[in-house]
Length: 318
Image 1 (cartoon, one colour):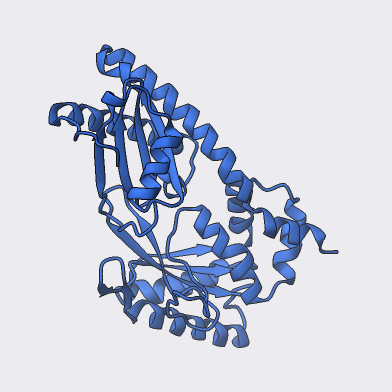
Image 2 (image 1 turned 90 degrees about the horizontal axis):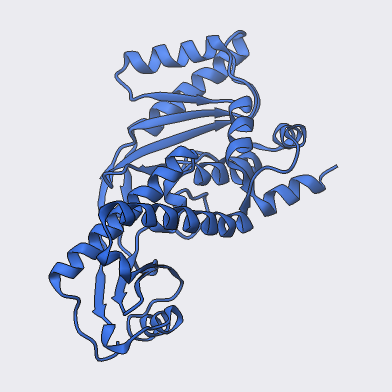
């Protein structure tokens, strides 16, 4: 970095207070709009640089080699250099701190001299402005659903279990804020049963995790006939195995069991099947079971969207 001074402690505490306020206002926007928090840069694991010059307080986040739950922060007082452009600060962070892909924003330095209500209004306006900018960037990759519901439903009906999991379910879970979702064969492999998702994580605002397992079935899950009873008995066995097996979480460096499980059908799930599964699993002290069927998947895709490449693939199908 340039020959600069550390930010004085009292000033640094005020800047950290601004950042906390800004983060909270940004979070409120996401909650109001029912968007997954961890799709946005501010809430991803990151290393952080904070620099203050005569015009702006610069915040630069880098996501490379960032450790979840820990933020390595570097602060520099750049006021002796006058007004420093954001591009110059980013260049120095890339050169001296090894930052690669970055997320950045700035807050006017004059906030330090404003009354609390003016600070609040400015930070709220800034959080809304930056939210709108990041949403545009995210939508370049993942867009709201523009294919018709009927087109998506046809794709789901015609897909194999593996295609449904890969093209619909995994992208959707990512949109909902779940993490560490991998299919068999990827580099960071997570144990699975068959083609199903073995585990995924949801980070709470406290930075703790809830762990989920997912059992996927193509078509309808029913328990009305003898053949289907056999199938649902197999499903019950698979869910029990899933809930009993331990997974290793490299983020916390230990084994853990899942807290909850999803049973997902690309068709419907009859009421008798739900009752059969819930009664058998709850009586054995298993954790909460959640059901998702075709209509639930269609509703969630309509609300949260799907990646543009998947929508294009579906759109091209006859």
